[in-house]
Length: 239
Image 1 (cartoon, helix red, strand yellow):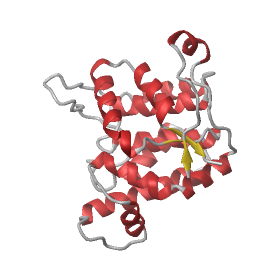
Image 2 (cartoon, one colour; image 1 turned 180 degrees about the vertical axis):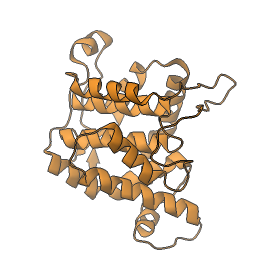
Image 3 (cartoon, helix red, strand yellow; image 1 turned 120 degrees about the vertical axis):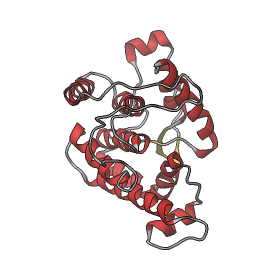
Image 4 (cartoon, helix red, strand yellow; image 1 turned 90 degrees about the vertical axis):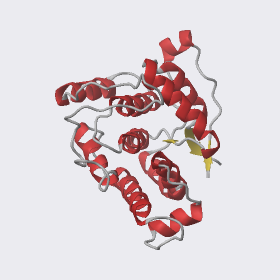
């Protein structure tokens, strides 16, 4: 089962010096096992990005290829592809790259993206619920590759790298569709490779998380979202 390790949220002054230290220390293989053990919950949580509300038992049944009353074929296909995305990031040994992020999107957005796995080449917008929707810039592949390379080469902790990657990709909308699912899986690929646990927001505080994401989309200030995620969504092993 998951547990959220206790750790104080760093103050701005401390965070500027230490940033977000890893709260979990596992080997990559142990981290992969953590993901496998909790796969039903992880897929169930990711499905909420598409408004799919299913129980753990329904999630498990769908992943086994069974039909579930009240769950459409489209929603079942989305759940299966999320499961395949988790399979991919736990089996891929290469370090995170833009190509791996594209591979993730190719899997999880197979049935709903305009061009699954390809970087967005048209205009996008993030719906934040009012007329001031955030309009992300056109995607520059070389700029995205440099941003990712610089982030991964930095002295930030594995946890901070994963969080920053996740929220960058969500806000930039680097793909045609499935950006939140893809960003979450890419971030967890970083967490797994670094043995830092997993990022998974409990369903009980999902609405609070979405509100914070909406604020971030509007103003671009990521620090409050990083603080909240560090405190509530970094999951480890309950011993």
